[in-house]
Length: 231
Image (cartoon, rainbow, N blue to C red; front, side):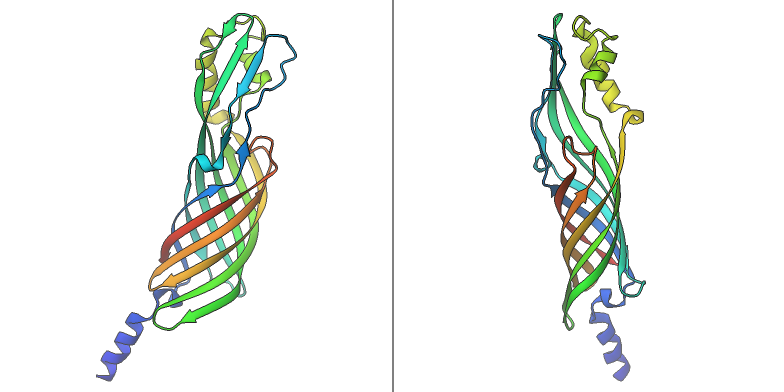
């Protein structure tokens, strides 16, 4: 009977108490907003327009892994992808380019060192903790059309080049992985972690400091929800 009680006791304890880390999936939204823009062409009658888009247009999806074997702090790594739809328009003396509906998209990785600030334990049911951290991140982002790019695709003649084939040429250039914009930055974050049996759940806010990812922005915020398992 004693052995049975001991076995049952350890069976119902939260699995995450014995875990050395965790992994799972996450979704979230970033809090940036990009206004409609008209890059200066310097030529009368020639206009280029990149439409507005924002982080709230879609979800950021990804996966995470964290390790808490290191004394005093944990290390986590995550990968994400996010995207938003917008329109690209161009017109010159030859006429307008057919409107191009396109997607701004970015894939990124985050490596974070985090530390527990406050912990709360509820025996046999759950545990919770507030943590804060900081780290570095990398990004691979689809570029946004600019005057130099359009001029090149029109054979160097921005005002008189035929825009009839520009839509397809612009689409192919922006979709080419070789033309992705690579950037690195750093971030700070804070969040709540809940442990229920073998499940881990997180709700966190992160602020990312990086250039050349979101047009005309040097930083942006984001809220993430995670759900996974202790390992």
